[in-house]
Image (cartoon, rainbow, N blue to C red):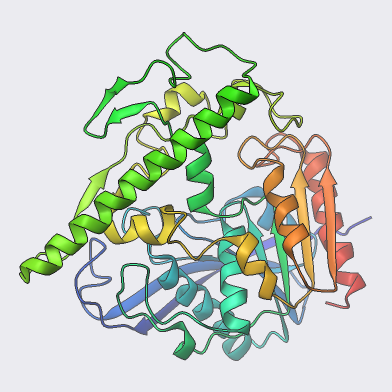
Length: 387
């Protein structure tokens, strides 16, 4: 039986100097030459440890999510770090988020004194953790996909000692390409749709044929590439002008239309049909919280374009050498079952483990038994490696 401790929360405030060519986020950050990061350390009251688990999502905060807190109550020291883009991914540059994660890893070792650091890549944090670890072990990136100088080879990234990939997809760019609505014919008018590709138009009913799915997937890729061409062309025009305007935001309509949401026979698992992690997928498709709804030109290339984003876990995991734990939740309504499996299969580390938690949803909402199973699984995996 795993012991239960009282949970204590401590703020973590980090800052470092970074010169930016222009202000990319609203407020003090980015305009005054400093980056400020806010996180929390979750501690089991009265229980010391020389190992810390670090959770980080590119665009969200995880300190109030159930899994990190449950791990802390089970005796683990946990850091939940927020990036500079917390709750605002419109201008997000994945290379800069890697630098932010590096600040937490350095703080954990050099300031807090932890001997062992384990990256916990949960949900959208899976591709981030994998991207970070690949660059920390063998850094190669000196520029963002837009061509801006951002040198991770000189960032002093410290490799973690182990990596977890929990209920995580392969990357924001790839998942968007599988979720985006290909029926959109006019990027300025979400009502201008091709009825032959509109899942929510009432003319197409599941189960979908293999031929339809192939056509649909090709149309999704084509739409993503059209948006990428717009981003590249606009950046080129702005550069050619030579003026003070260097960046521009834009809107992406209808981004939550994966056939898997409506057809449980596609990549079957235990997920709820007609549902996604944002609720009713038809409502989410054009709602304000949809994936990639608001973005900038540079952010599109760095986090949403499959042809440009480097934060692809399947590619990055090939250079990771530390122990790897991959956990699939069988009722996940956000992560397709193929994503964790392809990352595990691509991993070249000699120490890799795969577990599937039957019946578990993405957030373990109202699933204390499944969450407890995940905590015990993680605990045992760490103990087996003397972490």
